[in-house]
Image: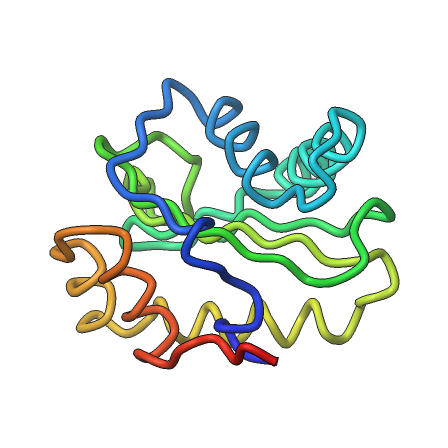
Length: 155
């Protein structure tokens, strides 16, 4: 599975304003919730918070990859946000975060979950890509950068 399989254009947002890490995770849960119910959104939020309690998912250089596993999802789902103002995220390098990729996977996705995270960490370790994401004029351009310009398969 590739990033294009996790994302849709509707789950890529730019210039997002979040007043706190908690508010950001709430917004991410809303984007990641494909069922569209308060219960499933809450379960996703709780999975993200549970993971953050183990240690910050803020990596370095303004990047965070909040993620969780939930029985309320049936497939892996991703969402991306570029923040209007960098946010304190308890990152490893103490830098504020402005690029956030959220991921939620089904409970049984143990190995797949780790592979997704490794792929995302590799993508976001590329300074040229993160610079392009920060400079992109709109969400459609960001989506194209994240997916390598490939269109979703209509099948």
